[in-house]
Structure formats: structure tokens, C-alpha cells
Length: 225
Ligand SMILES: [Zn+2]
Image (spheres, rainbow, N blue to C red):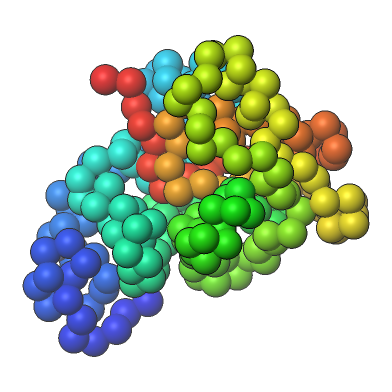
């Protein structure tokens, strides 16, 4: 983790030389990713919550819990960019540095254009940007497009919701040529709950590029309790 002098911890506000102080990091309950060979699908408590997905690899920092939840909502709704740096540093340190083989490209999950134009901010892009900067990986935001707004999902039946999600993403035909010489990428989202949105992007990408190994990364997973 890069060090800066005299800043205050994002969680407890005490003076520290890192974004999140050592006391707060020690208090976090993080996944033991090395125990599961960097694939939390091998952890029963994670697999139980992701039964309806096609991807069989997932890597995340922790269960969706305070104070990570507070840092994520602060980034999403108040555009607190230092939170992206703090969370990305922790993700790189805990999840990526010990990984035997990193992907060649990271693709953050896009927001629907209308929502992006309204908010002009995508927290997944901000987090992926910091992760890529810290681990020297390229990021691409042009290959996957969100073509259907899924904001009204709650009023739909389960079948309608699945159909809606199947059509939620499109692959940019020009940009996806970039993937021809690449065989391993990571799809990134800030939080994975049921995994259905991530799964839709994953399936779409695999349909266009069957040769691709696609890892799924997120800061937090919402576990079944
Ligand atoms: Zn602290």
C-alpha cells in the first residue's frame, strides 16, 4: 500500500500513514482468499448465495458489512474518491498480490447510459481505475455497453427480470476486437448480490469471445446469512 504522511483514516479519522489505519484493517473480517485458491466459489457460504450464475470463479475482499459498506456508499452517492483509493489498495494487497496469474485486462461494469449521464459517475469505474493503477493493469470501458435500463426491476416478475437482464448488455463490435489477442480478463463490480447482473455481462462476453477466461471481481459480496 502506498503511504502518504499525515492523513486521517477513512474509517476512524485518526492520523495514519495509510488510507485505512492498521487498527481498522485488523478489525475487518476479510475473506481468506489464499485458502480458496483465489476462488471464493469454493467457499460454501459464497457458493450458496450464487447458485444461479454461469461463472465459476469469484474474488472479493469481504462480506458486505460496515465499515466497507460505509466506504462504498460514500463513494457511490457522495463521490468520495479517497474511498476508491482506500478500498482498491486493500483489494490489491489482499486479493491480487498473491495471485499466481493476473488477467490482461479489467472491465468495470457499466451503468446504463441514462443513469451515467444523470450522475456522471460510475463507482465501479473509479474503483477499477485505482485497482488497475496500483497493479499496473489496463482497464477498458468501451467493450461492454449497458443498453437497457434495469432501474425498474423491482416491479417485474422473476421471468421478466431474467429476460430484461439478458438484454441488458451489448458488446461493442469494434472495441471487442481488442480481445482477440487476449485470453484472460476480469469483470469488476463494486458489490455482487445475487450475481444476476454480473452473470448477464459474463454470458454476453463469453458468447462473443468463447476463448476468454473471465474472472469475476468485486469489493464486497452479499452473503446469505
Ligand atoms: Zn482507522
